[in-house]
Every structure is written in structure tokens, then in C-alpha cells.
Image (cartoon, rainbow, N blue to C red):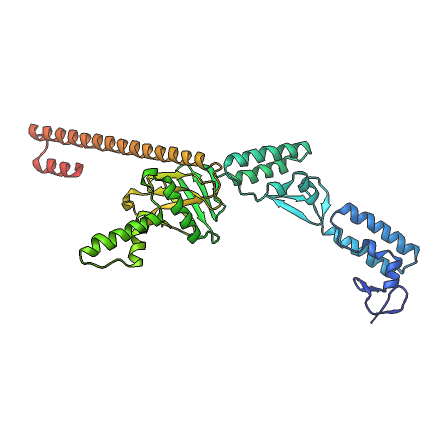
Length: 377
């Protein structure tokens, strides 16, 4: 127990103010429940300090207790920093670049709607920047804060970013001018996706080439129990039939899956195709990147599987355009290199001919000519 520094009575759980103790009864006289807490803004703390000191003076609290209560408020107020927006001292500040902004000013520009947002493209960044800057200027935010807001949105811009797609199945595809980045999370269900992808592949085939899995198994059974068995080779097992069926109409399809981020360079993946998602609950679509160097091996295909068609067709067209631009640029660079090499070769030949003429005139020796020719070549 501790002795109350106001009334002198012993108290089991006194309120502490620095080195002094105040019992619950005296604390209630001072209206302590109304003002003993952490203050966010300077003006509120100053207002409550005046009220508290007026009350304790009225009840004739001893000077050491009054001083301790005054110090309680002073310590909080001295620890406050000024908001770079409104200029008011506050307890807690939000960082935005190099500036500090209080919660009240942060609320004016509705940061919860845009701060830490993952933007789908740079147009989304610029659209939000314009909106927030209008609000900031309307509320009279100083240039240093406006500059910090601009800096924040500048940091969100990605060079060459055209669009970001969300599969809603654990994949995101960011489309850039010269490459794509496919992010596959742990939420991506490979088993279910391979089934959906297989179904989507069937949709992408011409109707006359489609065959049901049951029909395929019947065909396989006919082949295996007919021609092959008649030839004396008994392979008509259930496993063999299923393999033959899957070769004709696979229920699942294989593709390359890389968890995390995977860069798809347009110079390496030379073709891309697209299939929109169907209307069924589990029907999916895909954007597929293929590399002819792998000889059409589906295990090397990179596939972005989605269930919502929004912007997917447009994104596919953008990828095609970017791929074509990269290919044309590559051809142009190759053409320039050839021209440079041909020009260099012609220049060397001219130099050798010049020194050959000097040799024929007797202006240089055979040794000098051979040394110069070796240097040029």
C-alpha cells in the first residue's frame, strides 16, 4: 500500500504522477478519469491541463501534487511534433516521403483509398495522383506536402508497364513493353488449374477435331482389343486405354509452373495465344506463351489461367503488338550490324589495296606491307 500525497490515507492501487501517489477518492475529486490519458493534439492537451489544474486548485491539492499533474501534461506536449501540413503539434504523425502529416490532415486526402495500392497500370497511378493533388490544393496543403504526394506517386510508376491482370486464381500477370512478369502464389491450385486448362484447350480446337474422353476410350479400347490383340500383342489394359484416351482428349493439361515471379522475355517466347473463359462456374481461359526452340513441348509453355474475361482480350492484343515490335526491333538491329560489318570489311580492303600500291611503287618493303596487312586483318 502507498500513502496518498493528497489526503494522507493509505491506498492499495493509487494513481501515480511521477513520484507522487493519489488515492482513488482524491483522483475522482480531480476528475482524473476525464483527462488522464494519451493526447493526440497539443490544443486538446492544453485545454485539459487548464481544466485539471483549475479543479485540483479548487480542492486545495498540495503543491507537489499540482506540480506532478502539470508535469504529466507537459511531458506529453513536449514530445509532440509539428505536422508539416497544418503546423499543429501532435503525438502521432504519418510519414509520406520526407514529411510528417497528422491523422486529421491524412484523413482529408483519404489515404486509405490510395496509399499502398497495387496499381494495374501507370494510367491508374496518374489518375489517382490528379485526384489527390486536387484535394490537397483545395485544402491549402503547403508545397512541401504537395511535393511529397507527387513523390509517392512517382515511386508507383513502373517504366514500360502497360497493364496488370489478376486471374483471381492465385496468379497475376504484369505486361510491359518488352516482357511480362507472371507471379504465381501458393494459392494457385495446380491440379484444378490443369483440369480447367485442359478443358479450355479443347474449346480452342476446331469443332471437327473435338472428341469426348469417353469416345476416346471407346476408340482406344477398339484399337487395343482389335488390331493390336489380333496381332498377338495383348495391351488392352485399363491403364493403356486411359493413356491412349488422354493422348486424344486429355482431361488435364501440363504446363510450366514457377512459384513466385517469372519473367517472360518476348525475345525468348516468340508466340502467344488466347482462349477466353466460358460461362460455366469452373470454366477458365488462358494466355499462353510458347517458345519454338522447345519444339512445341507443352511442359515448357508458360500459361496465365483466368476465370474473368475483363481486359484479357485487350491485354492479349497488347502483348501481340509488343512482341511484334520487339521482333521488328531485333531485325533492325541485325540489319544495322550487317551494314556496319560490310562497311568495316570494305574499309579494310581499301586500306590493304592502298599499301599494296605503295609496295608496288617501292615506297615500302615487303616486310612492312606484310606487317601492316596483318595489323589491319
